[in-house]
Length: 450
Image (cartoon, rainbow, N blue to C red; front, side, top):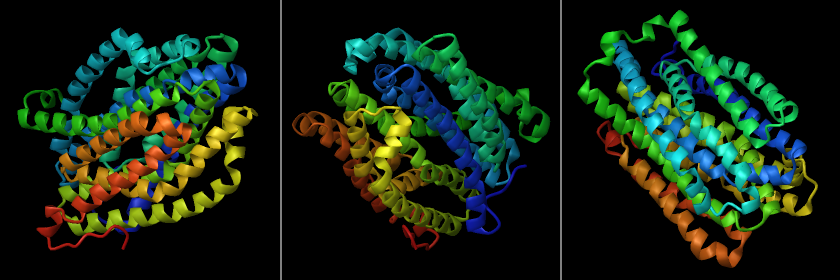
């Protein structure tokens, strides 16, 4: 069922739309975390470190696909919010063509340049073979990842966040079963978990297509929708690359930080990998609200309801603040236990490393939430330059930390890098958001929390 986010009770609409997104991300993260747990328990810390050594590269590839699909979905959501189903269908048709070309190009680049990239990441020799086998499979299946994210983004653009959840539940169970089959039974090593993820995403894509064909025929483009539309095509490319590059720039910064981590030894890499996985799980409520805001802001912007947009953003920031305060208290007492459960390790260095990362990053979640909410909301209002500039700030900050601070502070510098960068970006985005012309034209005074 499709829902308009431009009408009805604001808080209820946003929360009900965000809940399926939360559970979708939860199950997606759980089956990604299942990879980590299964590798840690069955293959050991070295194999876990192999995957961890290319974790930032994985985030770069997948993050671009997610961001690109979300950007294309913003244009569709604006059409849907304005009641223009023809524009929605044309957006989907042209997005399919654009996504195919972009994903194939990136796959070719990574497949032919993967060894060079891993050397640039300073991947340790003893981890190189496992890291290469894992990330090569991910790059090979990039078109599947791209199209799955595109299908989910367009369903959300039409106000349907429940169907992607149901489909993801099915593929999550399949992914975990394939993990055991390919790693434990067929002894495929870390490459097995990459193949399990790819197959699960393919199943998700097929189910999304089947659902749209049989249950949402009004959203399916006709052949004529694939032709022409130069202006719309340019807008889709602009928004897709804007969101994709924004995610990529952020991931490039993390990738650069990874080069510093990869020189610190297998145990630190393993502990950091476990902590990053846990951060991904704990950040789900924040990222779910961010994704809900993307469709919410886009639909309401398309409908010209900017006061509703402002109130929705402030409400999301306030919810994230309450969540972060409670989470910080829990992590203070349970960080080592969580790292033990994720990594399957009892090594003190692994536990100390992961616990330190959690303790220094979780308290800054309220700032991260403002950053994510403002960045995606500005994008959804078609204000693309400021969010990209904020991502450049993050990249610059992580470069400075990696080459100017980490050599003197070691892993403490790694832990401090992201909170410092989050703070700088949140201030930067808040400055432009609170002075946005689109609000001034409607005589609206935006707030961050009220």
